[in-house]
Image (cartoon, rainbow, N blue to C red; front, top):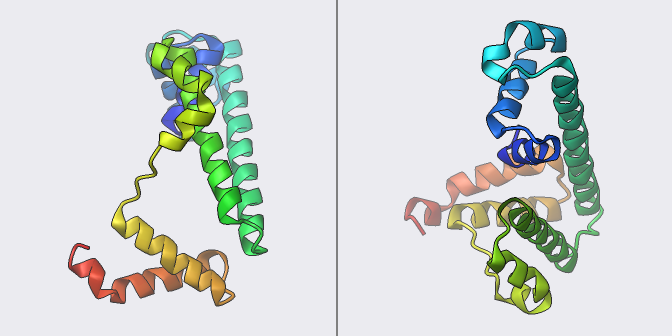
Length: 171
């Protein structure tokens, strides 16, 4: 589970992040709620079945939301409906959500200022992409242009990137 999800669940349920992380790890390893509440108190900080069940259920909800978000974006991408403008809007929405969470968790006056002046502030953000990642995105885009989708597009992009001499030069 991502750190963002751990932190969100911890904040929602008024728990320590290490408790949520411990429950997530135990569930991932196949432990049941009753087992965790009875025999793994030292790892969870003595959480009861109600709290562990709430963590489990919220984990499932957040995973389902992530899956749905990715499915929608993949569908738009496959049908060539994911325009650069829409991609940018999605990314801006993610950044705003992160700033809002930062404000909620820290009470940051700078975050409040950024959100209060969002229309001006958002234009000052700069997207930083490692060169290798940017090159892979371009390769995947070319594979999509050739009519490939999903794993096929990614495999073709990896093969193309492996042959790219600019990659070897560290550019």
